[in-house]
Image 1: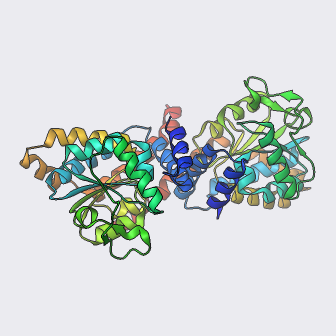
Image 2: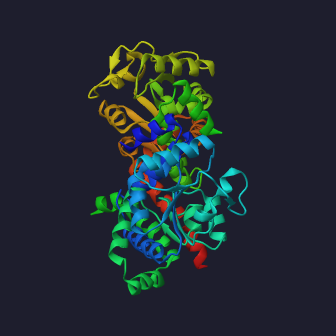
Length: 239
Length: 239
């Protein structure tokens, strides 16, 4: 069970206590979406696959909650689109960084960045700005699952293509991202991997996918899908 | 800060780790409601006040999350409508019961029921069925803040007037309750207290409030209010 695993990783120090609350917020939105990938999610996931395949230096960013939820699919996605993995956390301590990087390595990741930061994300104060030049700093396309709004904005302000996975389509992260995926993380990763397998090597299809995707329209659709799912109970009753 | 207090009480053993996740789910719905009491919430809160004032043996039920969030207003409401307080928890241990009852007493509650259960809520298995005859078992009107769906249903099946406080208007608890309040707990309690002060002693107004309240229509309104709050961002942009 996801909840038990999260709690186990809070006790071990990989996930913060407030990470449990964030997870609960996500659960509520997932519930509103009927716990399945909506059409808007699938469109964003396909666009994400296209951007990642089109990138020069794509990065999959991993924080405590993301690592706890699904290390295997984070690693599989990075392999599929030839992206690097960097651990980057909001509540940074050396111990938590080491725990998380080791956890990703135990789960099969080969070289995880983040142990020795040598760059800073501009406009962010405190240690959460720390990153590696080779990884986050020099990336052109960055996937941020369950990211905080300030950092998503700072990355977008650096001119990067930011792909967020955040169940709330109205969060600051979702509003800031280039591609806002509102979907549960494991479903999102599996869908991006499948779309990447489909698009890989087909430059025309990749460019077409990027060209025809409108994040703003898609995000509005995501909210409409939530509303129609919310009202479903009452519509059925009226029949 | 609520989050820090919750975590402190998880560490002390009053709140369960999954209580943190439940709180996060609530936060998401609160966010969808714009973090204020909607009209539908106010109508349900007024109906709740009327039912509580009209009761023969009203009970305010308290679990770990409720105690952690706002012990003072739980106690003040119980005093205002002459209700008893009973601690009743899902993950029951003698230690947690004692911790929670003591916590309510430290916050000023005079006689808190639950230490010596002598009755069971029918149709519930395991220790979460335990309650007192004087309190929950013999109550006619019961306020359950942040209640689990099974127990809300079991209480309704006993023929009680169940008043729930649950931010999700579509949860099983909200679907089962006689009066479903979708509002943040502190706001809900303060509103019920204010309505009770207003209605107290006015039997006609109390009966009129109960007679004219339709929970099903109100719950639908709550969902409509969430949708209109969700779509607000996009409507503003179109102007």
